[in-house]
Image 1 (tube, rainbow, N blue to C red):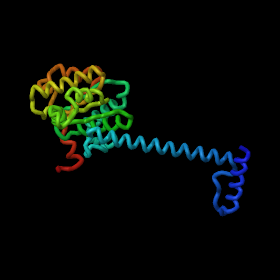
Image 2: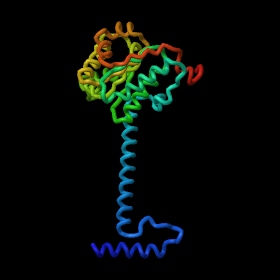
Image 3: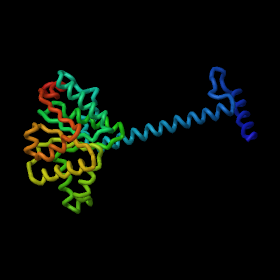
Image 4: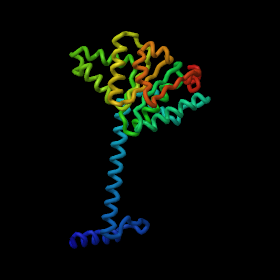
Length: 250
């Protein structure tokens, strides 16, 4: 130990002789060198953790189904033009912030282009940054994925396994409710998904252009009632197009 200490001090002494006077060393003895190495090791470890976290978030975003148009959506960049905007923003932010201690679901209904997708994606992005698994999927893509399980030459996953996977994500958001063909099979699938997620105490979100009565007629009273259990959220977007405020009349 003494020999090692002597070598270090000898090395420091030689280094000091050849070091230009305007350069201040980061350490002057073996103890300071050890502390410096420990500090650099800690910084490197923290850097690796940050990179791994960033990579994990990137992977989650890639699997989340959040489209490129909404990948940067947040509560902070939601356009507020009137009290209605302010109310839905407050409610959506509160939902996300209380997600850990809540198993509530939500329904965003109203006219096209009024900001439903922005706030749903803002909830998704917020939860992803806090370590949750999120999936946003349209009804059309959902049904297409489920029907692909019928062809065993295309995929090894079964319909049952897919439904099980859909029941495990922390938040599943189903978009374009009401735009699908109103088939009995599609209603049955959505019913199964909602039932399984409710039983697993998992939250579900729905985005739709339909009002409360139309959704009940489409999905059935049982599904809508399950979506409204406890502290669940139903926000109605009744104003002019949100997109027009941002992109003009394009």
